[in-house]
Length: 249
Image (cartoon, rainbow, N blue to C red):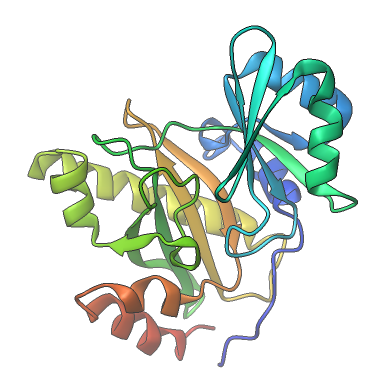
């Protein structure tokens, strides 16, 4: 059965769902609806936070806030930065977000040994009623960038290359991590699919911090494999996902 196109309509709703389940709760960064009160609370609690449109795609509109010394904050959106005092933070954020519904999320230190941000794009399909993790790749952000998608200059990379070259994992560490990732993918999509029972395809974006803890950043319905797996030098995963998509049901 062909896959219909939909969006997970609220990243925040998915985060709340997963944060209340024992299999996934420990992998959800602290996430709230952006309000003046949550902005104050989260920026006091965490050194860095991200603001994301609740229904955004392709990393558009993402803002990072970093707490500096002497009661100042640095806001970063794409290549633009602005430093403001604490008393100016709310107004500065509102100018960037407008009336769009945003969430605020604790930043995860998912960076390579040389300081590049990265995440994991994990593709899952329901085939013959069973959820399967059918493809995983890494995405490396440009140096100095706060996002990793290819639409913003990021580079998809094989999991093996990410683990060996950029994270310096041994082969054994890499094998163990892949098992953990696959297990978490299935837990995640099995639970999210209860919110969207007619959907047959999800992609989970995960981070991996310096302590090897996995974090679920968000769940996507339109995985856009052309902007991820198709850009890998080896097209094996892209062809595999394209073929299995036709079987999803």
